[in-house]
Length: 305
Length: 305
Image 1 (tube, rainbow over the protein chains, first blue to last red):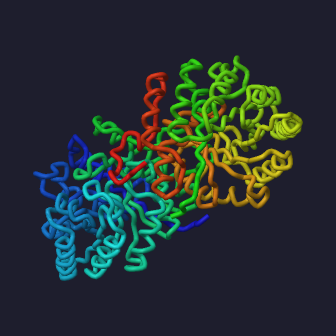
Image 2 (spheres, chains in turn orange, blue; image 1 turned 90 degrees about the horizontal axis):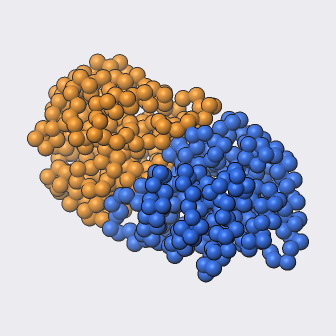
Image 3 (tube, one colour; image 1 turned 120 degrees about the vertical axis):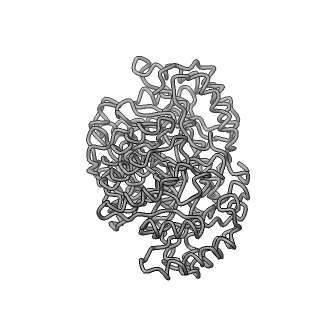
């Protein structure tokens, strides 16, 4: 039993809500984020600085960031796909900006309107800009479609390594590998984490996994085995990818936390409080199906989480 | 990539149908079993020799066994909880009889009306009886509730090891560890497989996993890592346990096969044919919810299975 700490980063307010049919009012988003923080989540991606015409669900991200900053002890993350978004995240006061870079060039053009190499250049500019500001802001980059692409199919491992190495060279603080479309399998996760870590070292810190093929937790286990100690996930398994048809939701926060707790990993998160936080989503997003096993199962009486 | 063979044993016609509200006619069961065999499944647990008053869905097991024996290349398994059932399985011509022994004494009494030690004695008598017959029949024993019990809670690992050792001493051919109520986690699977294998060697050959907590495939991965090369599963994730409230279905055959194929393991099973075989279940069991991710997901175009 590896009794070490694992960081679970809730990305529901960003990855989950951006795919939802309904738009949550700012105050409801903040009430949900406060519930998540009270359950023990210490890192939450609260929104995305993206064109409101493109993703209207994210139009209030600056207000959500500001509201979330009032929550004691919470690391407030916001996504930004371009330099303008990074500047806006900094202006709003985000502790962390997360920048996606698709390893698949086709997906990159669909997602951020730039090819992969051009987006890496953007990251370099963003890092330079952030480092020149008085207020520091952590820069997390996510190598999207690192395990396959719905448009390009298989993504060569060497290309993933090269992109990760280029991202490391920009001076970004951390690198995540994202299974944007849910194609990863555990053997691939192991091979990819090993190869990327050989290239960029401990800067590779997180996996962002989707559960499209039902392998999400198995892939998380493969990452854990390789020493990964941070994972993105969504309460109720919300999420998807607007440019990845058929890609279903993220791995389910409450199920991930349950697995980690049962394996002896400390997360600081109370499972029962997570399950309770699903109610707000169920009420506010009647059009969405909440996924997950442990929220509906009869849990072992011995489970103390 | 471990390019070795994994045996997937479909237990839907037994573990799945015994929990279903509707009773499938014998001919529909056999049509389904033929579809499964055509998809490449080489081992199917087709029914259970149990009191028809207790489990009316299994009343036609002898006829199902006889019908399944006509399927070329199929290993026909039947479950039996007592000596009378073992004799009936042999009389029907089953290639394999599977005998459950709950490590939890309370669950054992509920399931087979005998305590664990008395059931081990029954296995010993059954082995002696089978070995005295002219026609050989493989004897698979399954240590149920090996990872926890909804009635007793945690099941001590030493007790699991002791029961497995006692089962090995009966002369049964193979031993499976069953997560009857779905409480297992990957760390526990690893520790349990290691400890039991240290006691009984390669006779430990299979895991029977449920997906109650969403960890089914992660637990299968943990077993694979420890060298397990046989798994029970149910098409559409049917199943449960009549004496384990809240225990949901088995791991999903088509999702397990998808994971194994993507990891480079040979199963001989065609995923698309499994997905097609769900239709018969959907039509014949309108009251059941079919689970599973890969039957509804948009699969990667590169997937050839």
